[in-house]
Amino acid sequence: MSNQKTSVGVACARRPDISARGTGAVHGVVDLHRQLLETAFDLSVEYDTLPAGSVLRCFARAVHLARLKGVEGALLPEEARRIAESSLRSRAAKSTRRARTARVLPATA
Image (cartoon, rainbow, N blue to C red):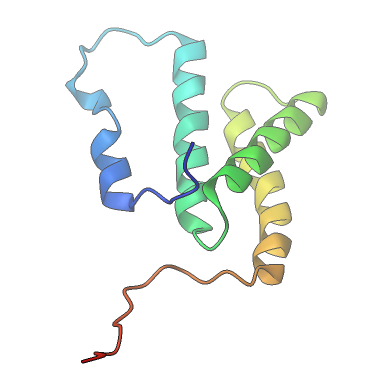
């Protein structure tokens, strides 16, 4: 398992295009799962200074806490995101890791 970040372009390309599906009704659980996955992806992109695994674990804990509060259905991703963001903001402020940028190495010869 690698700790390298997946670029946003690659991650977006890997996401299935849900508009290509038929117009049939999507089961509520499948739709909720898709919303949770999209929210988790958005958080990992938004907090790119933190390792993606840490962001996803934090979001998973937030989903668990939201369910313990009794939040259900379409409100679950929104409440979980709110809980996760409050934790991630403090982590990002403490993080010494910087966003990845291209570095130019000096010529040696």
